[in-house]
Image (cartoon, rainbow, N blue to C red; front, side, top):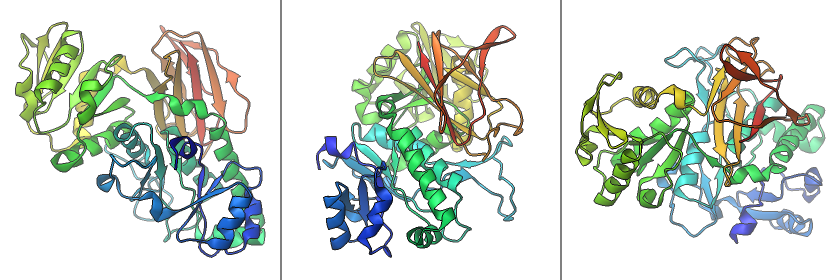
Length: 432
């Protein structure tokens, strides 16, 4: 399959019990153009081909967990498994009560960090996320399906849309509720496919996270990505094997997450970054790679900060054993004042920040896991954003509505943007 073809595919997992080719009518004039079968399905696949719909067998795209994926494969698609159903995690009591993380904020299950890691390790390939609705729970609502789609697209991936058993059984019979959910799925896919240009944007932040993301470094590095994203510490994923060619422009800091010391070539890259004004954070075993110059005050316990050229190097004084606290330390070492965007009253939103190839447009995406148009910290407060970079205009996108220009409001000495009510997903397209 050519890469140009793979980039246009919008996949759907064809239910095994669907044997009637007539069900292809569900896809007429819709965004889904690729059926994914568990096994070869002759009659349906033939009818799909005649209707201009592609088809693949799931095993043919070599689906695998992130730690078993062959990143150097020539295949144009990376299909990932062992993922979560995106949602606010409920307390184990079974009540309609959200579980909370160490900060008291709702604990959100998301696959976005996995998708971003895959994009960094397999540049230019299409990332497919293979996960299904939970089987031992009530069927997902229409909005739950829309959140699952938005969580994938906001990270630059595509979900292989999979239906729960009840929806798979009801949809062919034309059930009213099933058709409403199906239309919601299609309209959400259509919203994102009409904004394909955003897929070329690079996910970014003030921190570059460097690792092999494998072997003895896998747990700490991938959990760092997960937990940093949960606290809205925006970052750029950097595969250690590509560090020498990596673009570090625009980063305030980089963190070397691995136990192995940087190679001479990698150390030279990090040294140049620090000398030019950046902050280099090194794990304890890697600290000797850049010794630094003059000791500086460090407000974060467990670290030693030294000047180096125009920047500085930060040495961890102890082995990292808790990725949650490491993410918090990294955010404090980088400093929140370098966050390209600050969000207020949005504890149930997952924030994404990316930049266009020409760097003239910034994209701030929010996926709402709270289930309502005011799913912020209290469910009633306005969600607002503060944008760090000078900019000329802000256009707000939400599903089911035309884009609208936003005007800033004064908040003390700062300018903020108060967001209109929206469900599931909102994005600010910022012209800089």
